[in-house]
Length: 86
Length: 246
Length: 150
Image (cartoon, rainbow over all chains, first blue to last red):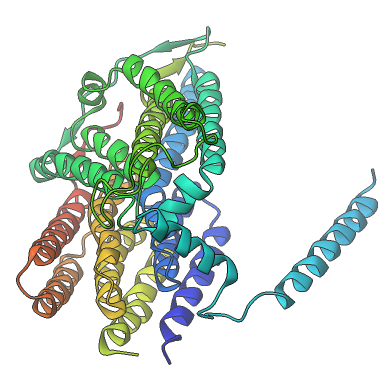
């Protein structure tokens, strides 16, 4: 019965990882990815690995979304500039 | 190589990996077991060196050499990113327009910034006592600075972020880690051996010998590296534009 | 299994799964709002887990999450401001419900801890979590204007 929380965390990780792969648009992928980071941190916590969970939280909740969204913005800006030059 | 051959190659490789994985899983200890030969030895060693957080003792004492490799990888990776993201000859910098941020959001960013910075330092300083350490704290501290970009605009961030200083800090922190290792050698034991400093009182900030110092070096390295990496990305996304017609 | 762990399991299985569903499906404004609420769904669960395992040091995870979760949402609010311009995400009922849930969990854990330095930390986490959540919702509902260039 004490393993119920581990099972729930595992299911959430599996579901959000699958959902992240299933998205086709990078911005939406980044949104699901940030939720995946959060549930992964919970999984590490319930498996008694809080150090890894902290790393995951630090990187996954703000840094990774920022890097992805900045790249998306750069690509879109480039596409807009090319459209204007045409 | 034909499509068919490639698929066959993939199938053979995949089958090999699957077989190895299954073989490895059959030999694993039972899930959630309380006894583990490696864990017991690691905990004993970390208690002998008065380090409350066994993971910190593993990372910065028992296997500190691994961590040296890891921070070198981070250093090299960020260096590579910065070379790729530099301003090329056919690009120029455009001045970004200042953003209009709602007042509550701006206030929140300005209040949360020092709190997050302090939390980052707290996580670095308590690495040998509680979960956390240089990497986690460094990332938090670096992220905290970027609240200025989110809550105000990019020029506000540029003003408090002298990139040259962070460049130097990054390199200095990696060297500091290696120098601490060499200090162990000079003291007559081995590279990165934790014999340099007294172990201190168990479960206090000054315990663990060189663990807090190595933690601080890693924290400085990670924080500088993340700031530099994000600076490269932000420059590309916000300021640098390709010349027209190129 | 004690009551704290049970509460954390229920919270993760209910609110966590709902936030995940909201983030993975539907129009973009709803997804961004669900991403924001994921923080306030999972952070109280981390507090409950720390209490349930009897390990006060696990509270640091909740502290980091309460700090960085809203920052992550601000990233999306800022960099997706153009896309969210026409159809602003608004979910004030849900936002305040999540804030109430966070407050209830923080109070319960505080009562179990008793007055001490640990309780001050818990109260700080609660303030950061609720404040950050409300501000992030505000940011999504039109916190950034005219950032086309930046």
